[in-house]
Structures are given as structure tokens and as C-alpha cells.
Image (tube, rainbow, N blue to C red):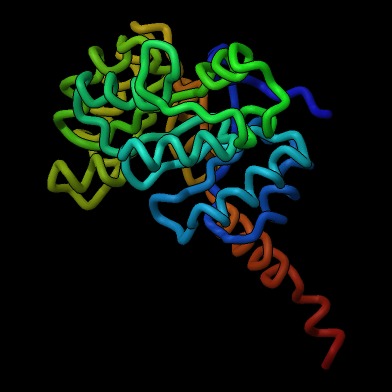
Length: 254
């Protein structure tokens, strides 16, 4: 089993989005040096059964599977965690009150998460109740900041007990600011404020980047957790790179 970095320790950690409903994708990514994957149930077609299969694939290959949830309804959070998700990426967190609500719904003790001994998260009944509660309450929670209100409240959100990191959603952040360029100066300034808030609270500063070059740039600005590209983009880019470089092969076929 590979040794992987841990987001909670604020080590440099790397993951990617999984947007394809094929558990083999997660299983294959588990053979790489990535530290985690994020199954994107917000923007890709994942129902409960599909998520279940990705959790099994992650466990088979030893890679933690986080889920970007489509909403913060109690049933959604409980379902994802019962399946065995290592953590939640929570979109559209605009206030500390929202962050507290999410933490409560994800926690057994001092929270409102319902308990059953039968799901994967409890070892299908093989764990003692106390051990299952302890394990469940270790779930990672990353709050995605993607609005001006979220930026304003970033320090309070980051310092909410149970929040493990702030995740910068640059695209929606730009859109919510009336901009169509996620590299605009105003967006960049907002990113720096979110990073500052995370560092001040001692939690992870995380974000999505499309490529290694942007990861290197934001690493210098204080980001310690990156979701780089996605399975779809990586497949397309690798295939196009091969196709573009195969000039000799094409010529030999003439």
C-alpha cells in the first residue's frame, strides 16, 4: 500500500476530479502517486450506486475518495459518509453558520448524523459502536469558497471547529463577481484572502488548478492541497499529445 500525504496535516497533497461513472477510473488512479481523488457528484452524473462503486474501487487500490456533494441536505451527507467517503468537498459555503451546519450533519458526537452499524463506514457491523463513531468523526470537511460573501466570511468559516480546509472555487468566484476571467486581479486578490484565512486558522488552503504550471504558481502563494485537472481532461490531453506527436507514424503509413 502506498504512503499518501494527508490534507489535515497540511502536507503538500495532490488529487484530481473523477467525473466519469466508471469505478475502474478510481481504481487505476489509485495505482498512481496521487494522494486522493474527488468524485464530483455536483457536476457529473453520480447517483448513490455509482458512488458506492467508486468507494469500493478506492478501497481496493488504497486511495482516499472524497466526494464533492451536490447539496448539504442531511440525507445527502449521511448517504455519502455511510458509503465510506474519506471526506466532503462542500460547494457554496458562504458563512460560518453554514459551515457549522455541515460539520454537525457530518458528525455523530456533538452532531446530528444518524448512526447505523451496518454500512461500509462501520465495517458492515464488524466495528464496535464506539470505534465506528470515532472513525466517522474523522471525516475531512473542505468548504468551497466561491462567492464574495464567502470571501468576506472566510476567516470565520476557516476557524469553525471541524472545518479542515478552505477550497477556492475560482470559476464560480469570478462568475459571482460579475467576471468571466478567473485570473482577473479582483479574483486573484480574493484568492489571497482565502489563503490568508486558511493559514490564520491553521487549516489547509486548497484549490482546483488545470495544470502543473498553475499549481507551482499557487504553491508559492500558500496553497498546500491541489485538485489538478480531471480524469476526462487528463485522458483527452494524453490522447491528443500522442496524436499530435505521431507524425512519423502517420507518414510511415502513406
